[in-house]
Length: 352
Ligand SMILES: [Zn+2]
Image (cartoon, rainbow, N blue to C red):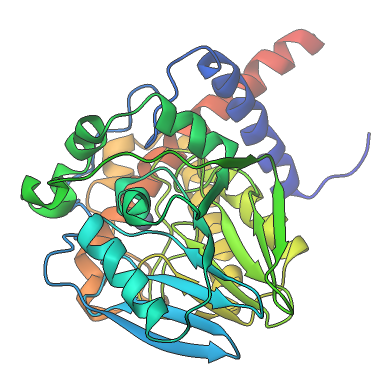
């Protein structure tokens, strides 16, 4: 028998469990926000990410020649960005509504008169796509095909309902929003040359949602990671419940691109080390979940009052939010570990 490291063995078991969950879901309705038909219920102490765009100001920060981050002045409200080539402009995410979408267009216009030829949507959540409709029809919107499929079976009202908690119940933020579905879908990779400026878009696999995509500038080694990697001082949120899948997605990302600067969809700009931190965090979550399951610890006692490891740097403003994410991840990993254990039992049954 081939010798596998304990972790690889563990991950392959998780993978088997994830694949079987996936195939069960293949026929289920494609939901924008979840990979599971019923998203996991929140653990104790969980608060929804605070994303209300009212009063949010986007600061334009130049990261390189023709490369700009648009950074929210509130800790977790959405960031965006744009890239200016010799021929055209490309925008990354359209933010929460028409007001915010217009703020992005105005920020571009403060820098250049070149046409906004592309707008990239990094996932199917309202806070990343609900500003789409204020961009001119000459702007082509590009997204991972899964994002498009999710949006095609969604409505503004439906997405707004699932995002209610993130805006503190203030449904007025959705006023006037029209759902504009992207024009161009890609499977794993899309790229464009804006004239001396190459922009890539990747889908590495499911992570926070099934559709999270990464925008990468290979020349500048700058990435927009949307919900896949949040900003400085954060941990991931395996919202769709696939902790092992999240880990393999990040592994693929680390093997494909090498960003030195990361603009997250939420939170402060960070560096390439964030990928390593996220990977080791998820590895630890998976290991401790396996340990808990093996020792017969109850799910509740494993996650309900857990705190983020004191060795991890967490932005003080985001501590409560990250504690909720952490417990969510533990809960999901416990369920996956349980399922992996069952798969293992079934397999050893076959071998007898
Ligand atoms: Zn987001």
